[in-house]
Picture: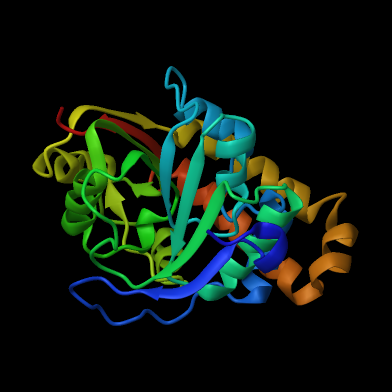
Length: 278
């Protein structure tokens, strides 16, 4: 395994699935990563921080377990899984190299040598043996994955019998959508959003048991409103100094749109917990 202090924790090799898929157009540029981290903290590309992870993992014990983090992003959640929640080892995978580079830097900052392995993968079949992981985790990344049925089938395959699937994701209410929701979905980030019920159905079809879903719309509505106020208010000067006025204006507009569509009931972040068949 690559040492984080020697090579920033990333094994920079291709992990080609048995059924190749076309590599997606990169979404997370350095500017996008920096802007999202301005909203949500170093290493975080989606909201909530460790408090949101604690809510997701409430009642679950991952101490010492082998975890797969799908869509590891900039590495903040993986670092928390290891340092706060006691995971034994995390394998973080992503289809984008820039976020993996950032995750490698976060791994080094947190002293995660030997505990966090970062792999660049292609979309599609997961490049791992059956029953390899005790836990499969993701923080708000499944919205980028088109083939939900394949995704959950593969998660079940790589989990040990009785293993834990725990993830958060951006979900949606029923259409028709407001113009604001349509604009958010068409923002160039490659979103493929599903409802909470459709996500549960895909998990059931893949054979998962004890599926629990928690709608986090109320929590996110309040959080998004605070974020918009924070960005446009007293911290405007700080944010513009960090990312520039143009990027700051986009950040504020996006935060305001998220708050609005959450209040409209269209954007419904959710937590999911399930177990693989024993």
